[in-house]
Each structure stands twice: as structure tokens, then as C-alpha cells.
Amino acid sequence: MPTILVVGELAPDGTLTRLSTEVATLARALAEAARADAVGCLPVAGADGPAAELARFLPSVVVDGGAGTDATATQRAAVLAAALDGVSHVLLPASPDGRDLAGALSALTGWGVLANATGATWSDDGPVVEQSVFGGKLTTRSAFTGPTGIVTVRPNAVVAESAPSQGSVTSRSTQPTATVPVVATVDRIEAAGAAVSIDDARIVVSGGRGVGGPDGFALLADIAEALGGAVGASRAAVDSGWIPYAQQIGQTGKIIKPQLYLAMGISGAIQHKVGMQTAETIIGINRDPDAPMAEFADIYVVGDLFEVGQSLLGQLRARAG
Amino acid sequence: MRIVVLTKPVPDPASGGERLLPDGRLDRANSPAIVNGNDEYVLEKALKLVEAAGEGEVILLSMAPANAPETMRKALAMGATRGVLVTDPALEGSCTVATTRVLAAALATLDSDLVVAGIDSSDGVAGVVPAGIAAVAGLPYLSYAAEIAPDMAARTVTVRRITPTGYDVLQAPMPALISGTQALGEPRYPSLKGIMAARGKEIVTMSLADLGIDPTTVGTAGATTRVLDATAPPPRAATRVIRETPDEAARQVVDFLAERRLI
Ligand SMILES: Cc1cc2nc3c(=O)[nH]c(=O)nc-3n(C[C@H](O)[C@H](O)[C@H](O)COP(=O)(O)OP(=O)(O)OC[C@H]3O[C@@H](n4cnc5c(N)ncnc54)[C@H](O)[C@@H]3O)c2cc1C
Ligand SMILES: Nc1ncnc2c1ncn2[C@@H]1O[C@H](COP(=O)(O)O)[C@@H](O)[C@H]1O
Image 1 (cartoon, each protein chain N blue to C red):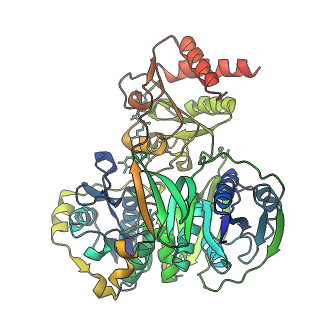
Image 2: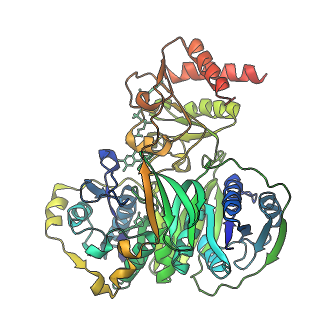
Image 3: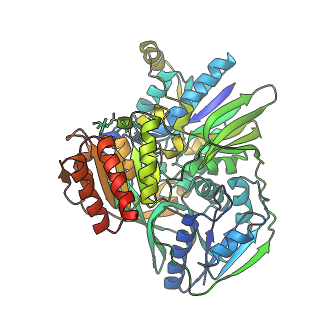
């Protein structure tokens, strides 16, 4: 039977991303249904530690050092493209690197891409991939027309669950057959006080124009910490320079599906809504009773975000003891 | 300096008019089209770079239905020099693989120092086409740009790529393909003069025959993926509005979070 390949990825600190473990969990379920094998690959030289972590979720993981440590996603794609013997489907995170990799791999192989899966099942013909399109207005189910394909998977499509037993880790160094131009990484800059990434956060506390400035975001950061979540923002807050663009949610920012989205001082404009409306629970705090958010939040608190926020923070901290 | 901007006409997400046809294809004929939001940011950057260089041109490249010039005029009104539209009835229903091949083939007919694209399109949100075009065209690919700084003398381009914790500084020889984000800066509004000038600007149309591409390998006929069905997600539960004192409101929120096991 054909093999399902999971391509894992590393966070900037060198650890395996949680999304990688979710992708692996989904691949394992597909492989079980298909009576196929699910295997993992980390196309990063020397990533033995993260590979062992990925092997908690998959029977076998290979570290492929063919592209070196500082390679960009396109170079990793060239390595993967040369090592697809027996593989029918590739699953990867729908992250910036995962998208770059999927795009290049698709072009190098001619395999189709189903992007941003929010779930997948196996039918006789291959994976049936669920996607949320038009900002959550529709849920589609799609399939590949041929025997092969590439799927990028959104955060929180499944809950990561480790396999009954630890898988094996091996290494190899595949020489790419296609030559892709090298892009040099000349510097890596860490932003001061880099925030928790919103991409795969279970809880996102998000602020908009109503937050008023960087000082206001300190309160949101405290609430996020008390909830074990990350801080997000509307474009108005990003454009004002209160918070980096990497935290922006919406049409030209990130599309996320956390378990809880707590929006503070965000009106809920359509371009914002498309980035978060598939969140399981949405709570809005806004002093305007008629903002668009009032139409689609589960709970809508009419009030001042600082007063309600301070009290919320106090009560959350009191509960945590 | 010559920059090609990949611009995709997309249904306006704010219009709420995005629809699928019964066979699962996007209904492009009946949705009001705009230039994809992310493409406007790279277009703005391209215009600024050419202005700063003091010479050169900004060329729009789109693969879209025959009515696309209407949408492309807005980008021309912002200041782009001319447009190239690949359009062919056989392209309807194209998947990302076909789109990538067609755009790469059209790109090969244009000479450029840089090619820029949006990080994703609001209708497909795949975010895979630019990386694919770079791979097919053999161009260096630099993605998620928050800044683009070409050095024409050295023939290199430096890009700040957004990362979860900051940014990477990437460098490559030109020509290169770069996908960019909103962090590049707000797009300008077309001036009245720009709108007038756009009417006279050239949009060259190319067909699959012009590009030597077999029509059966693209469009619905050659698609690598297909939509099986589309359903509206179950409606969200009615909103519970809380109008209480801050302490009482916060207490009710905490209770709700506890009920849903979120704390
Ligand atoms: C092409 C394009 C792409 C876009 N992409 C995005 C995107 O990716 N993400 C995005 O978010 N937006 C995006 N936008 C912008 C979007 O249209 C809105 O302008 C933006 O989301 C508004 O942000 P906001 O809700 O923070 O601000 P506003 O709409 O100004 O809302 C602020 C809210 O805060 C409330 N408020 C103020 N003070 C307080 C207080 N003390 N207590 C409680 N409530 C208070 C107000 O009642 C108001 O409802 C895009 C727009 C375009 C044209
Ligand atoms: N049909 C198209 N015509 C022109 N550019 C396109 C087209 N499809 C995709 N692109 C470019 O590729 C980017 C990413 O698109 P996608 O991979 O479809 O999300 C867009 O922002 C455009 O710059």
C-alpha cells in the first residue's frame, strides 16, 4: 500500500511545532483507514531531538540532511521531491514554511495541493479533505483526481495524540535531483519580547483599536497568560504600530481556529471576521452594543474593555490561586 | 528596473458574494471582482521601487476570465505601466498546479528584474502558487516579505521575511520571485489622473495557444483536485449579551469559560 508522508517542521527555538504533531496524528488516522503506512520526515540536518518527538506520533521518522540546516523551504522541497518513492500523499503544516514547501513540491512533482485542511477522512480513492472556504461561509469536501497529492493542514484540525509505542528514528542525506536557486539567510532577528505565536494557540486574546495603545495590550498579555493563550490583534491595532503584523488576524493576516477567541475592542469587520469566525467559542467585549461582533459572538459583553478586563484578570488569577 | 506583479482578480470578500457553482468551481462571473488584497501591497511596493529607481516599469500579470481587464484597470490606475492577461475558456476550473504552470509560461515571455506576488489569495488562500512558479521558472524564492530592497548595481535583492518571533534577512541574486505581505505598506488610492491614464494603458491578452500549452492539461479537464460537496456550516448559537457591572460581567464570563472547560 502507498505510504503517507508527514513533513514536520521546527519552531524558531529548534523544537518540533505542535502543529507537526497534529499533522502526524491526522496522517496516522488516514493510514489506519487506508491500511497504509504513515511515516515522518524532518528535512533538517541534525534534527534528531525533534525527530524523536515526532516519532512519538508515527512508527518511523527519518531526518533528511540533504538540504543542510539553514536551507529555505524551497531547497527542502527539492530534497523531499527526490525521496518520494512509494509515497502517495504528503501532509504538511499549513504554516508559512509548509505553504512554501507545498508550493515548490507541487511544482516539482506535478502533484495537486488541497490547502488548509480542517479535517480529512479516507475513502477508497484516497483522502477526502475538509476545508473551510470564503472565511468560513462554506465547508467543502475535496479529493484528488489522481493517486497522489499534497495536503496542508490547519492548526487545531485534530487533537494531537501520541501513538501506542515510540517510533524509530533514522537519518539519511538525499541529494536533490532538481536544482533550485539558493537563497541565503544572512541574519535572524528576534523581535524584542517576541510574543507567543497565535498560529496554533488554543486560546487567543485579541485587541483592536479600542485597546488604545501598547500599554493597553499589556492588560491583554496578562489575561492571555492567565488563560494560557496568545495575544492577537485586528489590523487597526497593527497599523497603529501597537503590536507586530505577525499577530494580525484576518483576511490579510492569519486565519485561526482556536478553542477560544476573546476579542477586546474589536468591531468585527468582515475582513477580521474571516480570520476567526470558525473559532469554537467567541467572546467579545465592546462598549458599542451594535458592533458587527455582536452578531456572531457566543458571548458579547457590552462594557469598557479595561474595566471588564481588569476584573476578569483578577478573577482568573484568584481562581488559579 | 522592471518588476512583474502577479495580480489575481478575486471576488470581493466584503461583498459577501462569493459563491460556488454546482460543480464546486468558484462562480467568478457573478461575483464583483477586485484586485486580491495582498497583491495590492506588493504592487504598491513595486511602484515605490520603480519610482525610487527613476526608471523602469511595473507590469501586471494575471490569469483570469476575459472580463479581468475591468479589475486590472484599477491596478493600472494606481500606476502600473501595462498589463498581461492570460485568458482562455479552457482555463476555467484550473487547480493550483495548472495556474502555476500557465503563469510560469507567461512569465518566461517577460523580461524582469523582480517578480512579486501576494502571500495568498483571498478566494483560494492556498498560498502555494508563488513558490511553485519560482520552482518552475528556476527563480530564487523569498517569501513573507515585510521589506524588499533591491541593489541594481550588485544585482541582489534583500528581503525581510516575517517569522513567528521576528524576521529573517534573506538575500538572493536577481531576478528573483518574492511574495509579500501587508507589512510592506498601505496601497495608494488611484488619483483622478491615474484613473484617466489607466484607460489608455495597454493590456495584452494571451491564450493557451500563444503559450504552447495543451488545453486538456489545464482547467477542469486537467485538474488535480475536485470539490465533492459544499455545505454551509451549522449556524452559530444565538449571542448571549451581557450588560452588567464590570465585576458581574467578568464573573459570568468566567463561569461560562469554566462550563466550557476552557479554564
Ligand atoms: C483589503 C483589506 C484587508 C484587511 N485585512 C484585515 C485583516 O486581516 N484583519 C483585520 O482585523 N482587519 C482587516 N482589514 C480592516 C478591517 O476592515 C477593519 O478596518 C479593522 O478590522 C478594524 O479594526 P478594529 O475592530 O480594531 O477597529 P474598529 O473597527 O475601529 O473597532 C474598534 C472597536 O472598539 C470598541 N471600543 C473602543 N474603545 C473601547 C473600550 N474602551 N472598551 C470597549 N470597546 C471599545 C469600539 O466600540 C469599536 O467597536 C482589512 C481591510 C481591507 C480593505
Ligand atoms: N490566477 C492568477 N493570476 C495572477 N496571479 C496569481 C493567480 N493565482 C495566484 N496568483 C498569485 O499568487 C499569489 C498567491 O495565490 P494562491 O497561491 O492562489 O493563494 C496571489 O496573491 C497572486 O500574487
